[in-house]
Length: 199
Image (tube, rainbow, N blue to C red; front, side, top):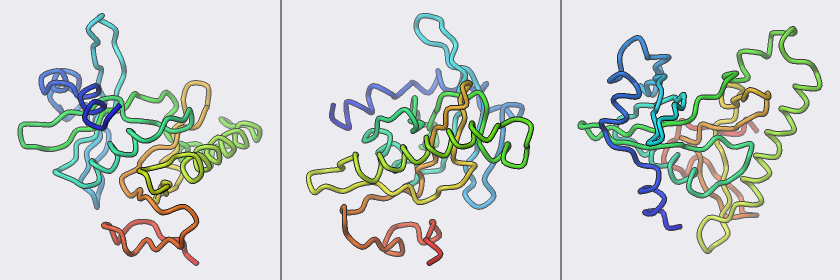
């Protein structure tokens, strides 16, 4: 499938997206990034068969970050990576990325809670995230020149947990590709405020 075919397959009309989020009503707003301005809304998308899907819609301005996330979603297919479900544009040309809602939210909510996650569940989450990273670094080939993907923003809030506590890595706004085996210099990429290895 080409990138254009992929985009056609996940794009939804403006009206459907508006209905799903109640026209981005304040009561559906979950959070707004302080530095990024990205707004996160909850909602429900109705399929042609009438099935409801709980969703999260992220409203970007015209943004390279949104474009980056769509490209990563096109390239990857792994059970421990949370891909984009649908996309849409607003009348202001804002990019809207829609993901399926993940039942247990993000890992950061549970790290200091010793009652919810057992040590075995925590270990299982670590292994799942390690599988996702190994897949990105070693199993995805971007383009014909053998480039792999670096997430660029790994933290506990970027690890979602489904209803079985299976981890799903997401948040690819700062991701980049790098030629496998080459020295990687994050400062050369478009967002200089992105993650850098402290060493």
